Image 1 (cartoon, rainbow over the protein chains, first blue to last red):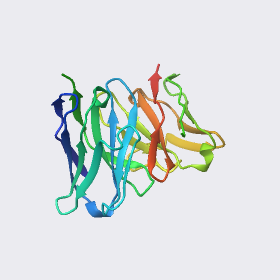
Image 2: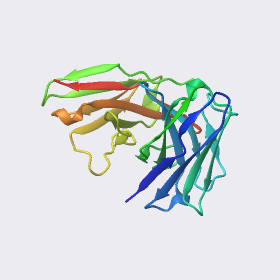
Image 3: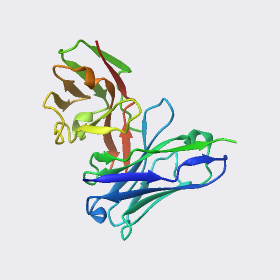
Image 4: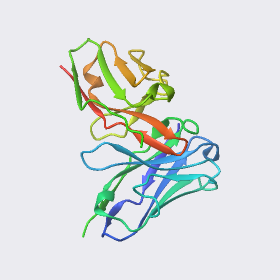
Length: 119
Length: 107
């Protein structure tokens, strides 16, 4: 069974940093692109970032470009999202998801981890 | 930038057919995916690549995509179908886009 488990969320002050992790199991992790999607409280889904299976290709939404860095460790079957210079508008539940293929849908999704940016 | 437009809400009577639209400029030239999100839960894909159902998704869910509108159709709507539904495309090969989401109410 494919499983994705996020961790690393929490309360952080504006301007601070946080690193999210997503532990994957049940599939050949290095063969699949991965994605981060976030959802602000009471709002819709927002695509944040994606990374190719080998890690050589990384892509970001304009809203996080230059502040967030996506990476992966295929030896540990783990996806990361390093978030710097955090702002209040970054407050959201962050989900990791497995891409069905490059430029494809997302399935499955993890349960999400909440990031709250507040003083 | 490419945008996807969904109605905020759609209501359907029990056992009737619900249609949720996703509008975008020439969206018919793109591949559309649909997600269901029940309250307090993570999204789940219900259709991928316009009209493909993952295992476990009932045949009642189907999709179409042409011109400027993609449509998720839910036949014989059930109480368990009540959820938020999101369409998603790739605006280009490096940027994913979601619609604003539609709340489906089954009356």
